[in-house]
Image 1 (cartoon, rainbow, N blue to C red):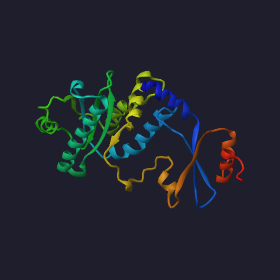
Image 2: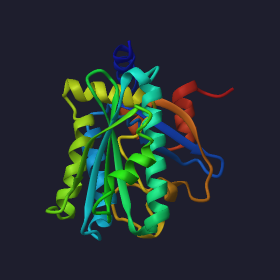
Image 3: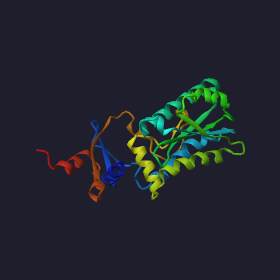
Image 4: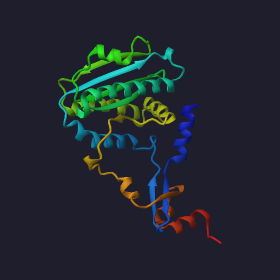
Length: 253
């Protein structure tokens, strides 16, 4: 059912644009209706990841990789299991930050197994190892909800190797023209999930990603949605709010 709904959503949003207007002038902005099912979504995510994350990972020399999963029998749904893992991730990283402060940076990605239940992959930069006793205490493994299926110190990896290590799990979930990736995207879409999560990225980094900064576009002007329409040659020519409203509703009387 979810797959059918996602395909209908994909069909409804293809080649559409979101048109924004404001009350200060007659200007409009046309933004492509870009979703995780769009043609170049995988390329965009990879580009965004590299532009935002590579400058940060470049400053680290040691990396730790951790993968955890859940016991499906202990959870009433895939969504509840995923929420459980996310809370666990937050608990682990909160405790690590209390101990090491801003010295560490992490990236996490959820990967759904064939049964739909999630793995949680975490790359921690700036930390060479997590003691098993500490990790088990934090995860409360006496409660059989969680299994550590991989814990690895990437001691022979430079930052590019570490970045590619976690990036392969991200791109695995979002590759176009891959049936397994489509299922991953459907599950992410149904749960309003991001492709990956990170520590908070400081604004002062001012990374030059080559992408449009929506905050700069919206600065000091309140924009609102005028409509969502299919892009065609006529829409492409429209550049003012009045012309767009005329296109939608005809002459105002």
